[in-house]
Length: 379
Ligand SMILES: Cc1cc2nc3c(=O)[nH]c(=O)nc-3n(C[C@H](O)[C@H](O)[C@H](O)COP(=O)(O)OP(=O)(O)OC[C@H]3O[C@@H](n4cnc5c(N)ncnc54)[C@H](O)[C@@H]3O)c2cc1C
Image (cartoon, rainbow, N blue to C red):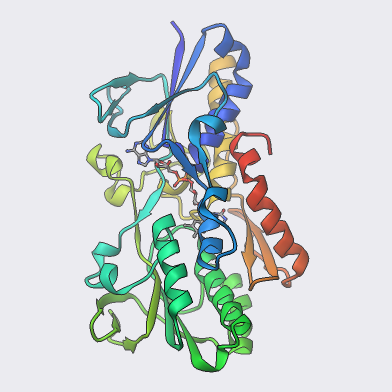
């Protein structure tokens, strides 16, 4: 009987894993020894880093959305039918339409989502840029904005740890280009006692903020928003007036994770090297939904996908595997409209941001276009 691989989630991690598996197992797939089924909940694949550029009218939505089917190897079966329960005891995934997908190997890559509703008043009073719709709404609000205090506030946990810094630097350049810097005050808040979770990045960002006159309040955890009075309150007792509130709300994993008893708030216990879900050696977790204390980023999902595809292919072809994930993450960080910096790090080596340059910015823009090749498993 054919070995059945089921991948739940057709985002960055799931798509790269599926395409790499199809390449590694081409012979087994074409001779009926392996079947790959992908279960996802939308026919579209969205390149989320593109939301930053939507906010500033630098890309159109059609540039960052493609059909999931077009990204997948033709041997992969795609089912747009949300998973409702993952039953690890019986090796089966249940879906909304009532179907069951038994598996020999399972990859869970259901990502993470913003949950503004966990902070009273935030959904009504705050703008976001972590979904396509909210990014467009923020773009339109910025066009109408005539000046005042712009508060950028960050909740935890959240994906793309550098995006709050990027939007702050890009806002600075946006108002500079509109000749509005004298009418705008930029105020950033962060939940811990520095500007960023990664200390070298926080140390690097501090002089950038000071040089641009961007104010900051650290140890600020959003508690409540009064959308009428336009006040953001923190758990630490600070009340901050705003004219425009832009936030990265706290995140949770997909509801199916909690509904399946796989992890509180949708984060799944994952071995940081094998990427197995605890003792389930046939279950792998990829991308944002792991509980590994590492950046939730597309590049993390990509490097994890490399490891997971290699491990499953070896388990099928050789009966064993020794490939391990070393915690590698790579990020280009926009420091405005025409410069960027770059960091890479892993479990052993901390990040060292390089001086911002135009070349790194062009590389980030280049990667934004090359992403589709990454998703196809080519890059
Ligand atoms: C504004 C912004 C900027 C970013 N910038 C960067 C950057 O510069 N660099 C970087 O590396 N990362 C960046 N990221 C983060 C990156 O996009 C994510 O970390 C990455 O997409 C995570 O991949 P994933 O596969 O874990 O989840 P996702 O790509 O979110 O995919 C999850 C998939 O699971 C599906 N799904 C969910 N529930 C179910 C269900 N019940 N059944 C079936 N399918 C389901 C979803 O529809 C989705 O297709 C950014 C993110 C944002 C929002």
